[in-house]
Length: 162
Length: 115
Image 1 (cartoon, each protein chain N blue to C red):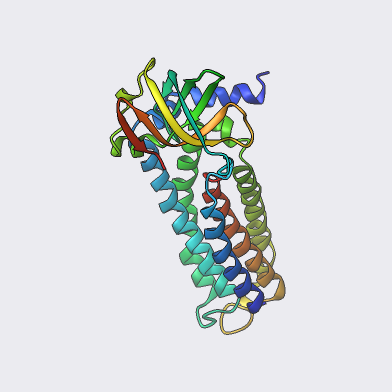
Image 2 (spheres, each protein chain N blue to C red):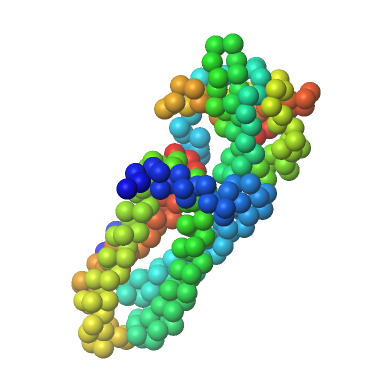
């Protein structure tokens, strides 16, 4: 059974991780893909959360969700592989980086919060689809979502500074 | 709730640039170092290049800049030759007494800003 450090070493020694470190343009290119992806994802999330919090109540929540959710999920196809590649280039140092660890914790919280929202408040969205105030639980999920995602971006940026 | 949200957003907008301004926070900016030594190893890699710099008292892991920045400022990988003499100015790590981050490097008669 290899230890955690050995697994991270193996990850860092992979051919793509090596290319990430050694190519003059690959790392910045992958970083750019990661940023384009989370601009779409977090942009979609924030626009949806603001609607749930009562901004632009004439826009139906269900219609907005149908428009934004596929883009948010598709963006994960850019974000996750690009993030994993950047992680593999420098895995041993990132795993001890406090901003990186906090970012991963916040991502778990964001996923749990979104899941709870979809299984809970969004189930009876037909009662608050348009022109009314969303239920308190939906608004709490939206506030949590906004704060968590702003925290994710802040921590992501801070990885380079701590 | 609207007020709390506005306040939080405002605080984040203030806090983020302030924190980012203290970049390099794992290095002690109050303790500038100038080291001259011989390059034992060099790595021209992302997220930043490094050299092992042998000085009379110890060998320093010296963190440089990302390769793209070094290349753009006139320090190609071929300049970081093992055995070459180099002078670095920078700051010691707060965590590792054998690590420093270089603000600039003088090598082969030229000085390159790394920040």
